[in-house]
Amino acid sequence: MSEEKQYIPPRVWTWDNKSGGKFANINRPIAGPTHEKDLPKGKHPLQLYSLATPNGVKVTICLEELLALGKTRAEYDAWLIEITEGDQFSSGFVEVNPNSKIPAMVDYSGKSPIRIFESGSILFYLAEKFGAFLPTDPAGKTECMSWLFWQMGSAPYLGGGFGHFYAYAPEKLEYPINRFAMEAKRQLDVLDRNLAERRFMCGDEYSIADMAIFPWYGAMVLGRIYDAAEFLDVKTYTHLTRWAQEIDERPAVKRGRRVNRTWGEEELQLAERHDASDLD
Image 1 (cartoon, rainbow, N blue to C red):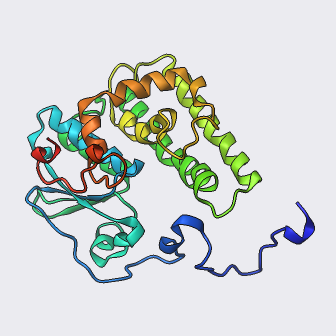
Image 2 (image 1 turned 90 degrees about the vertical axis):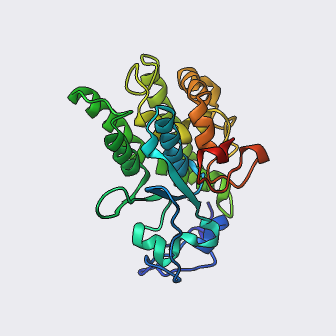
């Protein structure tokens, strides 16, 4: 890199709201609401406010899996949050999630409403509430939580790191792409090695760890995000691919992937879900 092109950080960083690539219009260095607007509320105790990004899909898959088990109290309303339009900065949304990220949920089934934000926290809340997809023995539960926390800590390097610089940044930069491609491949190898010895992430039983990891890493090896399957040579991760293909065929997963989706093939879209019949 020539000296005249080298970036030298200033003593004090200031916000340039014209930079940032595709999502520059919703990125800002401050929290809090930008406008007053209440969140809608439907007829079910569980109210989900989301979009079918990988983080949002985790929760809708979990809810559809719970319903498939016959957990009728897991019926829910799923309201669309258009993040490119700034819906996540409404006063109502910020009240549920002060971090202004999807997904967010409110449970009205008790004496007082309970807000839940962060996708991993929502998965854990639902698993405990309905007694499903979370091992009850200490060793199994701890293993499941370890993989759940692994996903929450690792995926930002895949999404905000690799995904941003490879697919969304205003210009292609060799160093960050190489740096995050290396980390993305390391993470894929971690999963592939684990799944060489297990059917699912934690053993023989499907769990919230699988639901958390599949929308990111399953989508990657299935060629669904960042158009980077060839670049990362995902075909070499054979155990991870086998696992992703098996989960992808689950009927509840197929339904969960559609909820709050507004792009792609029309038959895979369902902007909002307020009844099971909406998915028919």
